[in-house]
Image (tube, rainbow, N blue to C red):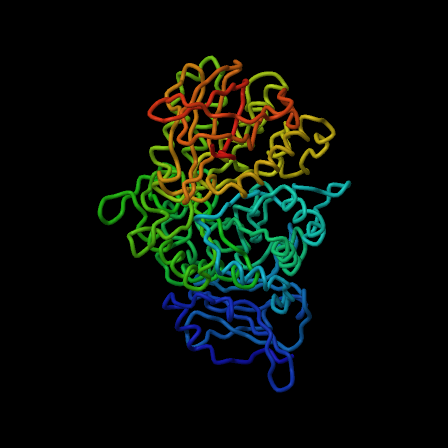
Amino acid sequence: MNAYFRRDLDEEIYLFNEGKNYESYEFLGAHKYQYQGKTWLSFCVWAPNAREVFLMGDFNGWHDHNLRMSNINNSGIWNICIDEFQDYQNYKYRIITPDFRSIIKSDPYAFYSEFRPGTASKIYDFRGFQWSDKSYMKKRLKKDHQHKPMSIYEVHLGSWMRHFNNDYYTYMDLCKVLPDYVKSMGYTHVEIMPLTEYPFDGSWGYQVTGYFSATSRYGDPKGLMKLIDEFHKRGIAVILDWVPVHFAKDDSGLRLFDGTALFEKADPYRAEVEGWGTLYFDFGKQQVRNFLISSALFFLKYFHVDGLRVDAVSAMLYLTYGGKNLVNEFGGDHNLEAIEFVKELNSVVHLYHSDTVMIAEESTAFPNLTKLVDQDGLGFDFKWNMGWMNDTLKYFEKDPIDRKYHHDKLTFSITYCFSENFILPFSHDEVVHLKKSMISKMQGDYYTKFRALRALYAYQYAHPGKKLMFMGDEIGVFDEWNENKELSWLVLNYDNHKYLQEFVKNLNEIYKKEKPLHQIDDSYDGYNWLELDNADENIIAFERIDKDGNKVICFFNFSPVYRTNYRYGVDEKGIYKIILNSAHRKYGGEIQRNTPIYSKEIPHKDRPYSIEIDLPSYQALFIKLSTKK
């Protein structure tokens, strides 16, 4: 076996150590190449403080000293090339630390990993997948994300659906069912919970060990490419949940990688993530920033991912996150290194892939997250509106008798909802840890819960901001989410669950069709209150408006009382058509059919005309002008 062959990597290594090699996955990790008629495999790993590094794996019987790697020009990049290997063979690195200890590590740039509980990296060629989404990708270049509908279905691949013996559906299994389901329900996007390799199922993918390795739980990486390709065939965009703030402490992973704090801060207090059992990345190191940005670009380039949802951004932005007593050089609590990393990340992503979206899961009022970097922003395209989500759920969890004292939970969000480009999330985090499922959060008896949940979802879709719903929310599962079993699809044997599913499907179609509901989410030009202060009766009403002045008028009765003869002012005389009625019989309500609403020449609240409507209990009603008179 030829144990060592050097390639000219000087420029790649120089850029990496300068923090400017944003595609470092092209030389780090295991890569095939041709030389003198043979196929060789080059291994490169960053371990600048190691005394020695050895390659070991299936190809050499796991001997721990006969494949010694070379530190290329003392750059900290260790390299070896072999010509006897097979795809899918396992390998690891044996690293001799500065204090002469021997530690065994997986490859940080592995492109495929051993199925847990194994921790080895695998030889895998991620290139060569035959995509069939050329037309989709061409259309994506022209897409205006901010002014188009965005209805996201958040999914955990391991628990959406399983085999009868509780085995996972593989990526290939999911290809046959998940894209068709998402399409049939009318969603525009799917957001997949983290798929970068992780050891502990209970972390849901948020404690990562392999930042270039699609988890082996569901098959190999090309299976994931196939799944994304199937989504794209159906016009569904794919967002991956991505975790650049912290990493798992597992001995085989990034922690103390070369015997020193390489990926993390050297100070244990600064490195430790309180409450999560993980370690913060050291955003002050150029190579660490390169590692993370390269991970993002890897999935965007080779997996055709349409966007990334960046997890736990608040934990990056604040030194005091989790109760730490830390300050920056100016005495403030902002993590200046992390802030610069976020700006660099978003700038580079938009430079390389201008047609993709970057989404921040951020729970504070940190300013300008969705402004451009050159406008003193952080450069995200969208931010989760956690304030709206928390206020809304608190309101709906109140007894209707008490809701009048909490009316501000419905109205306050409009005072800030145009300060950023927001997504309104009902995510996995809201249906775990004894928070109850969405249907179980609702007040009242069995039937009332469904009425209330339909009204809640209609309110979400009417409110300014893009939409996100977690799997199972659309069918009203009563169980909290459990990552160890599939969703309770059996509930669809019961009418009210089927009615709810049909309601969500129709809601998505109406949202996509009616421009006033999605075209202006970033300005008061797209919103106007009609009923703001009716706290006693739990009623609100507002108009959504598109760029041409067309309107959808949205009415909500969040009380158990049937309200009659409500008059509202309108600008135009004519016949108004009901486009959504959550109390309709086809959704499990009592209204047999939707009848047209005729305006009258009765001025009301500075409007020249008015309409009169009834609002059954827990009803959402959307209307629009259909015929002018």
